[in-house]
Length: 169
Image (cartoon, rainbow, N blue to C red; front, side, top):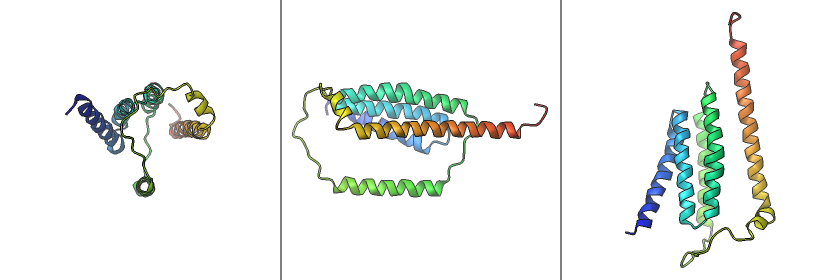
């Protein structure tokens, strides 16, 4: 076996293993740190796909920005809300079935050999602002909604704690 194949499988196992820790961990701090390894593993897989722009973007945005913000949110939040297991399981199962049907029903094109060119072609910015502008904007709206939701949950938790505090404190 070649070294690149071994490294690929190491990163696959690391990504899937740390992703499983994120999902199944009862400790939210452990889950957040496992998410760090998941993001690094995904960036490494992008490198194996010769998608260097996506790998650097993964490191800068997700590891450098989103994960640090998430860790601060976890560290500054004192109360964790209960998750309703049954609705979450139903929703995740439904999404898994839909993704499986889409995956199995798609006619995949298989290349004979990988292209040895960089993924940062001169037209990348033009593609992001023309062909792929809708997914780009949807991703930004989803992130804004997530930030607003996190702020509302944090604010509601703070109001609950101040209302429950006795008079002399």
